[in-house]
Image 1 (cartoon, rainbow, N blue to C red):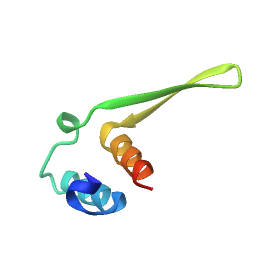
Image 2: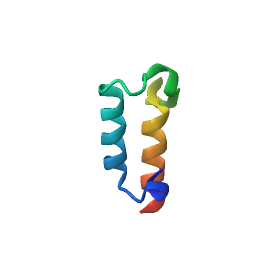
Image 3: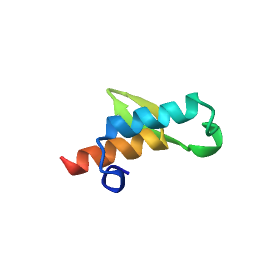
Amino acid sequence: MVDFLDQESFVIRMHLDNVYADGELDREPTRKDFFIVRFEGERLAERGLDEARQTLELLTRTLR
């Protein structure tokens, strides 16, 4: 999305938040949950990330 829209990820994230806040799209049918699972010491920890956030963060890291 960063390349396609030629914008920074925070601008896209802000726009998506506004789209959801204004009711243009419902958040639930337009997103997918992802989880990060890793060991923290002896404990297995699971962290949830929504698809849009994960995609934007990965794109941002890739473009740096």
